[in-house]
Length: 242
Length: 288
Image (cartoon, rainbow over all chains, first blue to last red; front, side, top):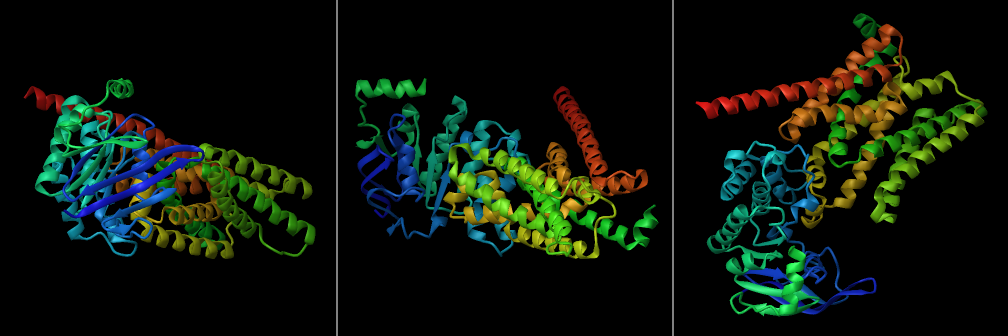
């Protein structure tokens, strides 16, 4: 199967403090990869490296077969960040406007927003079952609904890979289940490759096709069914979640 | 009174300039407010004051015009916008510290230049609080050029500025030239401040960039609607403020800001009424 993301024996440190050591990872087309691990284990750092926001001290990263240093095809990749950190809650933007932002890199500077783009936005909003809220301000929606809108923003440019950084934080239990089901549907029906950072081990284990446990090094890479967390690490993971 | 504004050239210049800044200040202000950069406009306006004081000092000491206070203010404002960015990069974890540094630096330099010029002149007073008679034909031409630049740049960069304002991290990951766009944005703020000072005055210029926007975001559904409302409120503030300032012989900066605050208060009331109406409709739907 085609390799979407190939991380090869990378090291990364923040000043003197090592964050990742000898990390290798492969994400293949159609994978739904859950990336778990304790706080400080390097999950977000790994994602930042995969998105070219940081440069490794050693090793190589390839996206869609191209080195990350020369990768230009960002239309193929979408990122859904942890909403609480990235989103100004009072921002006066409608669902339509937020989802349309996902097309900005594709449209570029001098082309106008056309009827074709408008249709793409409506289609992406429909895919996440939010069509009834198209012209509502995003700030008036619940946490779960907002996160669906961010998924629609990621979908609108028709990417092949979506990377999600703790997207379920702050969403109530009932909505989290619906959110996972939405991701699973996109993964299975549309063939989207997904990489999701989470602390919700129980949730991700039910839906992901592959789990990676990262604590500066890859401690586990394989199927969710065979994953067994050592008692000490389980304590650490529970501690974070509490 | 309206006839006066159309009859005399200097008043005509003021009116047209007012209409232009009533458009570009709230337009840019929408991005400034949602990016939580409102205080940057204040810092830049204080540095503009230093530039103006420097220009006035040169005028007074050299007796021949080397650089007009308007251009000196514009130059200082643009330089300060670059400096703010430099400081924000140097203090990544305390980025807001750039604002008091630049603001106090601007006031400090202003005090020095004003003292060297032996005090407060009437001309400086008009720069501080605006004037209905301060816009020369030369000033007007520069302000028209600045307005065209601002409208063109926002026209081209609207989508990118919106993404950058909403979610900076997403903008960077999407491969947008976030640094370059932010840099251009800072230059635009400097230009709009320089364009607005003749009418609103240095001390009140940031108000025209923020108060109409504050009123607009209470009522708007979506960013485009917020922009349209902010411009509408900005133009209303400028027109009512200019005419009342002229009629009562008060610097228009004061009257423009007071009108914009009245509009803001009105927006609170309208928002409450709209909300009450929405709840009533929802309740009636629930009952039936």
